[in-house]
Image (cartoon, rainbow, N blue to C red; front, side):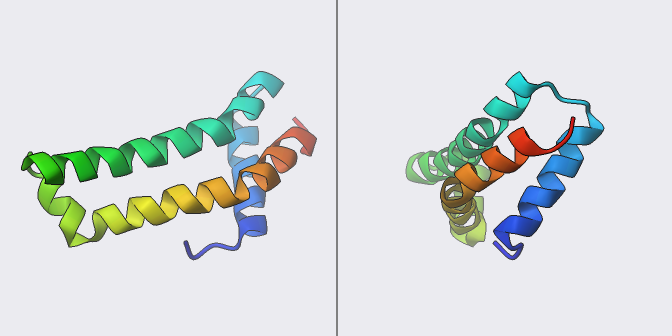
Length: 90
């Protein structure tokens, strides 16, 4: 991922602040982001394995690598983003 984790934390808090998200949503967001990125990777990978198109081709055209990296990026920085979301003004 190209964005520094701290910059991503700032952008994420600004984004979620624009929706006036409550504490519960802020607590759940980093885990939901992780689950969604992983789900996209698994969709592409399983589609490639089973020959389901267009997802199978997208997997080998770079989308699989992108979503695997996105999942790892979110996992690595989830605690930082959780803290930012929970300490930023609502």
